[in-house]
Image 1: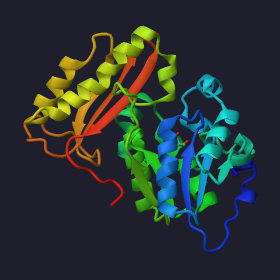
Image 2 (image 1 turned 45 degrees about the vertical axis):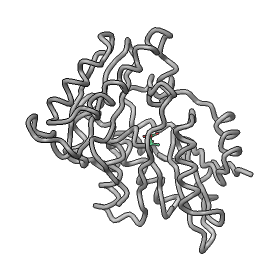
Image 3 (image 1 turned 60 degrees about the horizontal axis):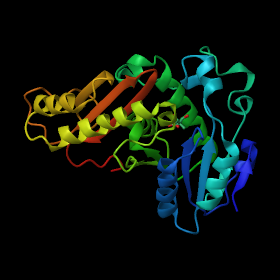
Length: 284
Ligand code: PAF
């Protein structure tokens, strides 16, 4: 039976019970349920799997984006119940940011230079919002493990860095992106695509798979990806970077390890995706 909690005081932990935590903004899909499965595997049947559902206002650029974000608590809870989540923590904005502390004047966790590139370049302040809410949630839930999807790869890297550099006593686990049968990465934004755009969107994962298959330097890989992208997709970036996103791979560097990252628009819908070039294990 999933227990629904709105008040953080009720999160108190039983001694000796390990927790695995899945922070989400709700509107759950199979990708989130993969995180639940990973969380359960980490703590076993004696452990507790805790999910938070909170549409975090500080990571959005405009108030209208916050109000338009899908809120589907009832069906989210049913999915949590069916997938063995022990506790769902669904706080109010006031619970997480009392006394207007969500304003830019409040204390926040700053991401450093990685927060200003890729997604951070298109969405100023986004990662400070993400890191601040994740830090707060980790302090409230006190999990041993926290799982995050590789779909938001830059977020995963930044959260891993925050946990390491600020000495949070939690192990961050990245979980592989769940894809539709045709390859499109699962995302709540896919629902905004028209039937035609939905077909064109497949070219994003096709492009990344093409790059992965191409032997040679990063420019050869990226050229293969550009060729496979549908003309209707307008890229914001398509890059090959080191696994820790500290730099782009040199065009002529023989790329055996790293990450291919894409973001772009199909009409007004912004989609992101990424894939490893070689083997990567972020949780080590
Ligand atoms: O990935 C998300 O859904 C959010 O960025 C997160 C990690 C739950 C923080 O609000």
